[in-house]
Amino acid sequence: MDKPAISTKSIYRLLIYQRCLGRLEENQVETVSSSALAKAAGVNAAQLRKDLAGFGQIGTRGLGYPVTDLIVTIRDFLGKASFQPVILIGAGNLGSALMRYDGFQKGGFQVIGAFDLFPQSAHAKGHEVPVYPMDTLTTFVQQKKVTLAILCVPGEHAQEIANTLALAGIGGILNFSPTVLQVPDSITVNNVDLALELENLSYFVKQDS
Image 1 (cartoon, rainbow, N blue to C red):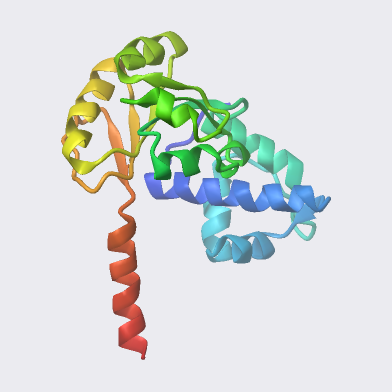
Image 2: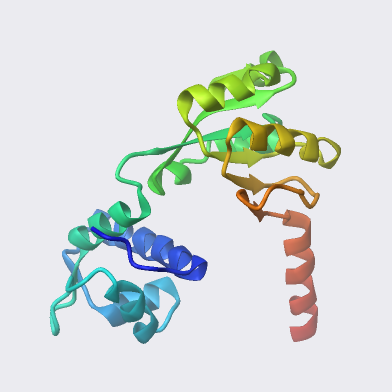
Protein backbone atom coordinates (compact mmCIF):
# COMPACT_ATOMS: atom_id res chain seq x y z
CA MET A 1 0.00 0.00 0.00
CA ASP A 2 1.37 3.44 -0.97
CA LYS A 3 1.71 5.55 2.15
CA PRO A 4 -0.31 8.78 2.07
CA ALA A 5 1.42 12.02 3.02
CA ILE A 6 0.87 12.50 6.74
CA SER A 7 1.95 14.95 9.43
CA THR A 8 3.73 14.17 12.68
CA LYS A 9 0.56 15.02 14.63
CA SER A 10 -1.45 12.62 12.48
CA ILE A 11 1.03 9.83 13.14
CA TYR A 12 0.69 10.48 16.86
CA ARG A 13 -3.09 10.24 16.57
CA LEU A 14 -2.78 6.98 14.61
CA LEU A 15 -0.77 5.54 17.48
CA ILE A 16 -3.57 6.53 19.88
CA TYR A 17 -6.20 5.00 17.58
CA GLN A 18 -4.20 1.80 17.44
CA ARG A 19 -4.02 1.62 21.23
CA CYS A 20 -7.77 2.19 21.58
CA LEU A 21 -8.49 -0.43 18.91
CA GLY A 22 -6.24 -2.90 20.71
CA ARG A 23 -8.34 -2.53 23.85
CA LEU A 24 -11.51 -3.10 21.84
CA GLU A 25 -10.02 -6.23 20.29
CA GLU A 26 -9.07 -7.53 23.73
CA ASN A 27 -12.72 -7.09 24.73
CA GLN A 28 -13.84 -8.98 21.59
CA VAL A 29 -15.47 -5.92 20.03
CA GLU A 30 -15.69 -6.53 16.27
CA THR A 31 -16.76 -3.11 14.93
CA VAL A 32 -16.58 0.45 16.21
CA SER A 33 -18.18 3.65 14.96
CA SER A 34 -16.08 6.68 14.11
CA SER A 35 -17.76 8.66 16.90
CA ALA A 36 -17.04 5.98 19.52
CA LEU A 37 -13.41 5.57 18.44
CA ALA A 38 -12.93 9.32 18.29
CA LYS A 39 -14.31 9.74 21.81
CA ALA A 40 -11.99 7.01 23.14
CA ALA A 41 -9.03 8.68 21.44
CA GLY A 42 -9.93 12.19 22.61
CA VAL A 43 -10.46 13.71 19.14
CA ASN A 44 -13.54 14.71 17.17
CA ALA A 45 -15.07 12.29 14.69
CA ALA A 46 -14.35 14.53 11.69
CA GLN A 47 -10.64 14.56 12.55
CA LEU A 48 -10.59 10.77 12.92
CA ARG A 49 -12.31 10.24 9.56
CA LYS A 50 -9.83 12.64 7.95
CA ASP A 51 -6.86 10.75 9.44
CA LEU A 52 -8.19 7.43 8.15
CA ALA A 53 -9.34 8.68 4.74
CA GLY A 54 -5.93 8.08 3.19
CA PHE A 55 -6.25 4.33 3.74
CA GLY A 56 -9.17 4.00 1.33
CA GLN A 57 -12.55 2.50 2.09
CA ILE A 58 -12.18 0.62 5.38
CA GLY A 59 -15.40 1.21 7.31
CA THR A 60 -19.02 0.82 6.29
CA ARG A 61 -21.51 3.64 6.73
CA GLY A 62 -23.94 2.74 9.50
CA LEU A 63 -21.80 -0.18 10.74
CA GLY A 64 -18.46 1.41 11.54
CA TYR A 65 -14.89 0.15 11.22
CA PRO A 66 -13.92 -3.53 11.55
CA VAL A 67 -11.60 -3.40 14.56
CA THR A 68 -9.09 -6.09 13.57
CA ASP A 69 -8.82 -4.92 9.96
CA LEU A 70 -8.21 -1.35 11.04
CA ILE A 71 -5.52 -2.46 13.50
CA VAL A 72 -3.71 -4.33 10.73
CA THR A 73 -4.04 -1.39 8.32
CA ILE A 74 -2.59 1.12 10.80
CA ARG A 75 0.13 -1.28 11.96
CA ASP A 76 1.25 -1.96 8.40
CA PHE A 77 1.31 1.76 7.65
CA LEU A 78 3.42 2.50 10.71
CA GLY A 79 5.78 -0.38 9.90
CA LYS A 80 5.02 -2.27 13.10
CA ALA A 81 3.89 -5.65 11.80
CA SER A 82 6.63 -7.05 14.04
CA PHE A 83 8.26 -5.72 17.20
CA GLN A 84 10.51 -2.74 16.58
CA PRO A 85 13.78 -3.05 18.52
CA VAL A 86 14.75 -0.35 21.00
CA ILE A 87 17.82 0.12 23.19
CA LEU A 88 17.98 1.87 26.56
CA ILE A 89 20.97 3.75 27.94
CA GLY A 90 21.23 4.17 31.68
CA ALA A 91 20.06 1.19 33.74
CA GLY A 92 19.56 3.09 37.00
CA ASN A 93 16.27 3.39 38.86
CA LEU A 94 14.33 5.04 36.02
CA GLY A 95 15.91 2.87 33.35
CA SER A 96 15.18 -0.29 35.28
CA ALA A 97 11.56 0.73 35.75
CA LEU A 98 11.21 1.34 32.00
CA MET A 99 12.74 -2.05 31.24
CA ARG A 100 9.96 -3.67 33.27
CA TYR A 101 7.21 -1.61 31.60
CA ASP A 102 5.06 -3.93 29.47
CA GLY A 103 3.38 -1.07 27.61
CA PHE A 104 6.22 -0.97 25.09
CA GLN A 105 5.36 -4.42 23.76
CA LYS A 106 1.68 -3.53 23.56
CA GLY A 107 2.71 -0.63 21.34
CA GLY A 108 4.84 -2.83 19.09
CA PHE A 109 8.25 -2.07 20.61
CA GLN A 110 10.73 -4.28 22.43
CA VAL A 111 13.72 -3.17 24.50
CA ILE A 112 16.30 -5.71 23.33
CA GLY A 113 19.28 -4.36 25.23
CA ALA A 114 20.36 -1.80 27.80
CA PHE A 115 23.72 -0.13 28.32
CA ASP A 116 25.34 1.17 31.49
CA LEU A 117 28.77 2.09 32.83
CA PHE A 118 28.28 -0.55 35.53
CA PRO A 119 26.33 -3.37 33.88
CA GLN A 120 26.99 -5.82 36.70
CA SER A 121 25.26 -3.55 39.22
CA ALA A 122 22.32 -3.25 36.86
CA HIS A 123 22.04 -7.04 36.57
CA ALA A 124 21.46 -7.20 40.32
CA LYS A 125 18.15 -5.39 39.86
CA GLY A 126 16.63 -8.59 38.47
CA HIS A 127 15.14 -7.44 35.16
CA GLU A 128 15.12 -9.64 32.07
CA VAL A 129 16.59 -7.19 29.54
CA PRO A 130 20.33 -7.88 29.10
CA VAL A 131 22.59 -5.02 30.21
CA TYR A 132 25.85 -4.44 28.33
CA PRO A 133 28.88 -2.19 28.91
CA MET A 134 28.84 1.16 27.15
CA ASP A 135 31.81 0.37 24.90
CA THR A 136 29.72 -2.26 23.08
CA LEU A 137 26.88 0.15 22.19
CA THR A 138 27.92 1.11 18.65
CA THR A 139 28.59 -2.46 17.55
CA PHE A 140 25.28 -3.64 19.03
CA VAL A 141 23.25 -0.91 17.31
CA GLN A 142 24.80 -1.61 13.92
CA GLN A 143 24.58 -5.39 14.16
CA LYS A 144 20.95 -5.38 15.36
CA LYS A 145 19.96 -2.52 13.03
CA VAL A 146 18.40 -0.56 15.91
CA THR A 147 17.14 2.93 15.11
CA LEU A 148 15.42 3.93 18.39
CA ALA A 149 16.97 4.65 21.78
CA ILE A 150 15.74 5.65 25.23
CA LEU A 151 18.14 7.90 27.13
CA CYS A 152 18.02 7.77 30.94
CA VAL A 153 21.37 9.18 32.02
CA PRO A 154 22.35 12.24 34.11
CA GLY A 155 22.29 15.52 32.20
CA GLU A 156 26.07 15.97 32.24
CA HIS A 157 26.54 12.75 30.24
CA ALA A 158 23.56 13.01 27.91
CA GLN A 159 25.13 15.01 25.05
CA GLU A 160 28.20 12.78 24.84
CA ILE A 161 26.03 9.67 24.62
CA ALA A 162 23.71 11.34 22.11
CA ASN A 163 26.78 11.98 19.92
CA THR A 164 27.66 8.29 20.13
CA LEU A 165 24.09 7.29 19.26
CA ALA A 166 24.12 9.61 16.24
CA LEU A 167 27.36 8.15 14.93
CA ALA A 168 26.05 4.61 15.51
CA GLY A 169 23.03 5.24 13.29
CA ILE A 170 20.22 5.88 15.78
CA GLY A 171 17.41 7.91 14.18
CA GLY A 172 15.17 8.63 17.17
CA ILE A 173 15.86 9.33 20.84
CA LEU A 174 13.34 9.39 23.68
CA ASN A 175 15.22 11.65 26.07
CA PHE A 176 14.51 11.44 29.81
CA SER A 177 17.70 13.34 30.63
CA PRO A 178 17.18 16.92 31.89
CA THR A 179 19.07 18.57 29.06
CA VAL A 180 18.46 19.82 25.53
CA LEU A 181 20.34 17.61 23.09
CA GLN A 182 22.13 18.97 20.03
CA VAL A 183 21.78 16.38 17.28
CA PRO A 184 21.85 16.32 13.46
CA ASP A 185 18.64 17.20 11.62
CA SER A 186 18.30 13.55 10.60
CA ILE A 187 17.65 12.54 14.24
CA THR A 188 14.32 13.11 16.01
CA VAL A 189 14.40 13.77 19.75
CA ASN A 190 11.33 13.63 22.00
CA ASN A 191 12.05 15.08 25.44
CA VAL A 192 10.32 13.76 28.56
CA ASP A 193 11.03 16.16 31.43
CA LEU A 194 9.06 14.80 34.39
CA ALA A 195 9.88 17.72 36.69
CA LEU A 196 8.79 20.23 34.04
CA GLU A 197 5.53 18.37 33.49
CA LEU A 198 4.83 18.48 37.24
CA GLU A 199 5.60 22.20 37.33
CA ASN A 200 3.20 22.75 34.45
CA LEU A 201 0.51 20.66 36.14
CA SER A 202 1.06 22.49 39.43
CA TYR A 203 0.58 25.85 37.72
CA PHE A 204 -2.82 24.91 36.31
CA VAL A 205 -3.93 23.35 39.61
CA LYS A 206 -3.09 26.61 41.38
CA GLN A 207 -4.96 28.58 38.73
CA ASP A 208 -8.09 26.50 39.28
CA SER A 209 -7.94 26.60 43.09
